[in-house]
Image (cartoon, rainbow, N blue to C red; front, side, top):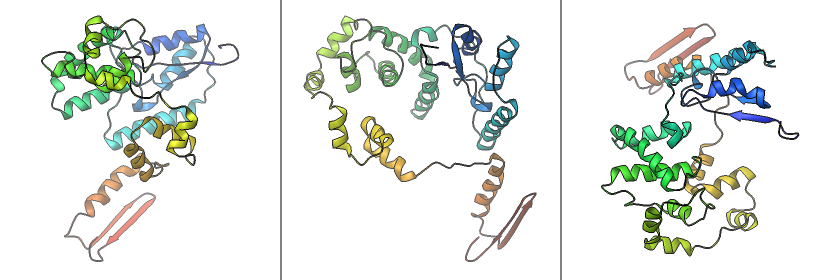
Length: 293
């Protein structure tokens, strides 16, 4: 507890320390541990919920969790991963390099995907190593949004270009000139000199101060819900428009239906069938051609 507030702990398994931390947490006043379930656990995600419960109980702690629905939740996400061909999390080995670069678990997959799309997967090791150097030179910013994205972008650009800090994005400049507050320690003099020499730095220094919430809501629209207001305040308008146009996410999904849905999609592309019947326990489906199946 912190005063009267319960203390929760959220940790990722990126270098194999999260679960050990969770086992010690109750001894230091932590009352809730955030976990993941089934195939969504481990890897760069949170510790496996069923395993955490079992281990805490083995250490003598009381865990008020109903095991039967917890098992169903774990089974659901395992089945979902299998049905959708999604990767399954697995325990990670300790990696001391992480203590320097601290790349967040959520960004590991994104970074790998972006490097793969640019056909630069072979640079992953160099980018991770550069990430640690950039963090130190920028005054050890905490590796959370937006700082994680700023540091990672600089690391990728430094690796890709012949000379480091050849390209410095606007958000990195804003960070350096104090738009996000004062860095933990001063930025390396050589990096700060390069930033100060950029014409773009003078332009960004001249930007007006950020509007207060009242002015921001007036500009974005007073009719917006709190959720949409926050999204539009921090994200590009086009992305928010796309999300609202897509509508609510599907609320119910049965992983067992994935093979049937895949079969239906394939059958609808066939031009040589006039009638198809699919039967299984609890399901009877008939497709008849009326100008096409």
